[in-house]
Length: 343
Image (cartoon, rainbow, N blue to C red; front, top):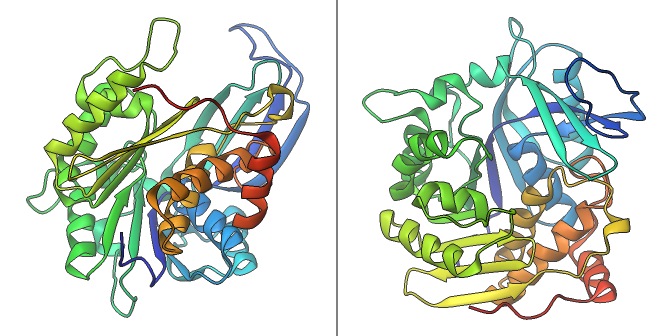
């Protein structure tokens, strides 16, 4: 898994998350009291970039996106400065409103509900992506289903995501795509054409099931691990990825293009330590690629991925509880690991 030592470039979704905690999610035609509100950066390109800079401050990270010239846009620029993220390609359009998300977390069950306005994200196009002068490492792109122009056909390609990935690969980058948990049909429509332009795919059990049309979840929402492995193999065969990783509550599986399977159980997280799950998937991806950047083994990289996700669960926002990779691993060892995954 060499070639990631030059660091990372994130592309796509940057938004401002208004993290709102409520006692429980209200039924329609009713009301509930807000317990707390916290403004933070959000979106896959933001979360991965910030997580990586906290996990490994020596690793360079740049980003490519679009924001408005408003208070939320200025807030995101400050996030980049605070964490040492190269924002020279974070474009500003004074005629746009910066993408913002109302990220609700219900305190009684920890479940998330996101309601967003995506104006700046909707105006992001492949033309904004210029890789000139960037040292080729890993390009982390997302989120399909959130960007109107990128979701649509572009210059003969099935969608703008394909165009961007082709540009990244032409510039020497390896590629990974972050997927949002939207309808299975929408995931297949936007992501399937991208598979042949990806080197890696790191997704959850629902998303791999949507891509493969394999039923990876039981009726009560539990992960069907053997079905996840089947689905991962099917998706791997659809593209040219060297590796597909799928994470789920009990652990994660990784399948190489050689067919080799690696499994890793998750951290034994106590429910009373979970403050919020927003951004846990981004933290998993950042931890995993941080491990590869540090030339850890695949199994060790999966352990770091789980440890990073565990650290993120301690805050209602996406990266407020992230710590260095050494601290994440220490936290995981203190909590212990779940039983080995049965395949």
